[in-house]
Length: 510
Ligand code: C2O
Ligand code: CU
Image 1 (tube, rainbow, N blue to C red):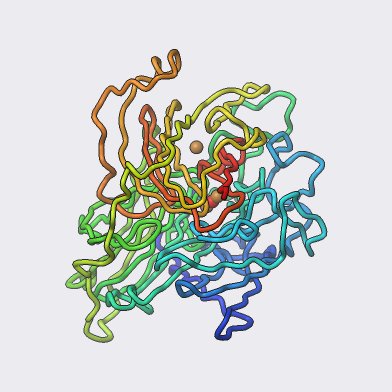
Image 2 (cartoon, rainbow, N blue to C red):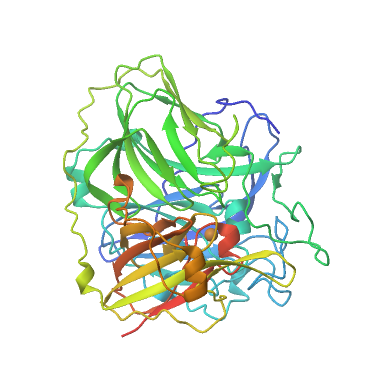
């Protein structure tokens, strides 16, 4: 279905109010419900799932170091909105259909509050997964200022729960951020970018089967899903009226599978100031920014002297990335900025020259090096199955870093696509990427490099929690494990992959 562009104004998710706030802690309650919402004015209202009655969920804003308790509550219907494949791990017939568990993506958090995929719960906590430990999660927010997001993580149906609407921003602020004099208040705008497809009646479309149906299965997971329409903050191709001044935008790719390569049709520069996990050392001026699912970047865009202009944010990332087909006129359009508001006061905000010291982790401090493959194989139905280290979710835990230790992980991609690999709990730095000989690796299990090590791209030079592991390359990341011990996960953030075995548990041990 083709929908008119720039018909609706960009919604800004409300900031969530705590139920209780005192000197020692802050307490929130968040309800998940099924709601009807207008996602575009030419569409009938769409049934979606939201947090606190909205999709995307309200923005949770906390201070670095603030102790926050959140009771996430499932008040969703018993039947799922979207087709479930019961052959997928964790989604067999013996579990309730509608399960939820909330993960704050990028949070430094104890494992019992991390939203482990098997810590799911149903309405009223009547049934829970085997790793469920508590109803009220505790977040110590030991991160610096950064753009995080929360989303569902229930085993085997994460792709459906997030697609139904269960995602929102979680922002951590700190003193240093305040001292930088960045555009703030109404000049700081979060942009949650997703793709969806609609049925004629306005309902969400998610495939029940593959283009070539799998015989013997009524419903089958698809290898990846990309939507025909782009939404920002839950509106299809919205516009935002802006003043001729600087704005800070928090970009988040919250799609199931689609990569976005964001550009402005004015050709102007965007000034990137942060990566997934907070400020970079210096801003960088860029004309395009590539975001795989779950990646974030804060950018400053300066609309000064552009009075009366309309500027379109576009996308030209191929799907699948990097060797698939380019987007069309619809999926190549994200949103529009209209510089039609008059300047309400002099813009005194800055693009700081220096933001936060960045110290490279020393490779020689690594206690352990792990070689981990990204594989593609087939399941018993002949469907492609993506794996990490050739293991399925249920195989015994093999990654068990020691608390406080530094490790280097070699992500050896043997598949044809780029996969955004995410580790819970920690933040990492990208060391480099390097081409290697896949055939020889498959035969001899030895890495033969065919090119020089390439440092991370300028836009990735900072703390990250999600990295693109490109095809035919070894991507090396370095990180220190802590400050908690316990059970976490690492996985591909393309949700159709994550839901079907491209996810592994890992444990931080003492
Ligand atoms: Cu954004 Cu394991 O998740
Ligand atoms: Cu993947």
